[in-house]
Amino acid sequence: MSLKQRLVPYWLLGPGLLWLVVFFVVPMYFMGELALRSGSLTTGYTFDWAWSNFPDSLSGHTEQIVRSFFYAGAATLLALLIAYPLAYAIAFRAGRFKLLLLFAVIAPFFTTYLIRTIAWKTILSDSSPVVSVLQTLSLIPPDGRVLATSGAVIAGLTYNFLPFMVLPLYANLERLDLRLVEAAKDLYSSSRQAFLRVTLPLTMPGIVAGVLLTFIPAFGDYINAQILGGTQQAMVGNVIQSLYLNQRNYPEAAALSFLMMALILAVVTVYIRFAGTGAFMGDEDEETA
Amino acid sequence: MASQSRAWAWLRRNALPIYAVLAVAYMLIPIVVIAVFSFGATPKGKLTFGLDHGFTTEYWSSAFSLPELNEALLTSLRLAAIATAISTVIGTLMAIALVRHRFRGRRLTNLLIVIPMATPEVVIGASLLSMFIYYTFALGFGTLLIAHVMFSISFVVVVVRSRLIGFDRHLEEAAADLGATPFATFRTVTLPLLAPGIVAAALLAFSLSIDDFVISNFNSGTTVTFPLYVYGVSLRGVPVQVNVLATMLFALLAIAVSLVLWQQRRAERMAAVRPEPATTLAPTSA
Image 1 (cartoon, rainbow over the protein chains, first blue to last red):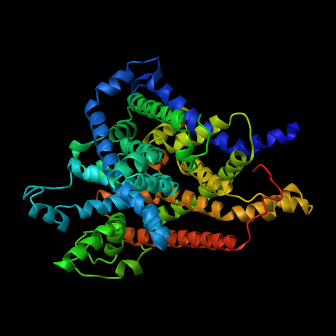
Image 2 (image 1 turned 30 degrees about the vertical axis):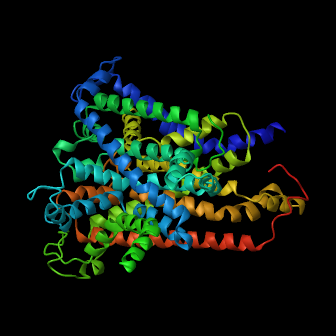
């Protein structure tokens, strides 16, 4: 192969790689740099290796960090429980309605995320039928609210990130060789055993991909907490947003944001080491990194 | 008794499809709510989300009567169009390189494409803002464009790539055998076959861009996009026209996506009619 031919892929990749490096990788460096500055908004922030910003940003917001783990974890679990049977039904029982159901799963993306969440706010508002049904069923106290509770935020997160759970699960289930399940049944396993010992292990990659794709954005989200929650439901995202844009305490905001990125990078790297980039790229044959 | 047990058996057999319909209905609830309340009459023209005042088409006929909203929507459409054009071209080229070529740095490239998709929006927004602050870069349409192209690229690559993987390379070989130059082959064979994938990727990029709030909120300066406008007014009351425009936007995107899906399905059906490519005659390592 001539040198010219060997350079072809780099020419094709060039513009995209350049864009991603300059506007994704390099900004991470500047966020790190900003995180090591100290000073105040009035005097300006100067770079002086202020490592203490990192522990400070954590200790100042432990409450919101713990809450983010809890909310995102609960929403991810709920999304998995809702999405698995749905993905299974779409993959094996939908027949000619398969495309229509998949279309419905991505339909929420065609309306603005913010407006969808505001719609949920009204569905769950104090005078809504949903709340009175919950009150009648004594699931919440007679004068109880749904808005401005942890439940509302978790429900919002679950709803908004559900497609990210359904799609990788569906992609994985669709590839499942049903003959393996039949073989298990031929060998006298019950439906339950066949599911637990054949289907579930074989769809584990889809589950893990779905969990990551749901948990990560849910963990960083602040729209749901802001619109559906009250002051007691703030998450890390709310803190970062408010520190950056309202208080303009850039170093602390950058430190917190940087730590979040480091955590997620660690989780994703470990995942990719074991499972490759296939689940994210939508094909299983991709080599592991 | 017997009919009851039969009903029970039917229910058990169809539990999964019934569940699927319910789950999908749940996913569509807010969309229906948005559309229904775009017809709700309210005394002050702000959303009240009660239907006690009855229905009206007033806000549909005055959909474009709020100058600020119009401007925000136009900004969003312009931004999404430009960002989609740039990210679709750039991403398609990357996808071609990843599927068609073996080269050093492949894994690193894959990683660089995957990680932005797995990064919370707040981190992407915050890190870009950090860089813009460092260079005292003026925030506005330009910084929004930079950000929107950045977060769309990865998704474009993923969509186009999946289309390229199932690609019949015999057609390109045939074109080359018939004397087409590599560029002519690309233009007349590769690109048309790849078109549905590229269109799907462009649609995805467009809806990501027009929907984005978090990253835009960090990097917009005084420029107002449609989601930023909604956020701004959400505190003092959302004009009903917002619902009208959101419903219009939903309908447009839904129609566009159904057309793409329909076209893709038709192409697959037509491909199924053709005889299998004679792979036995020319055992190439695909």
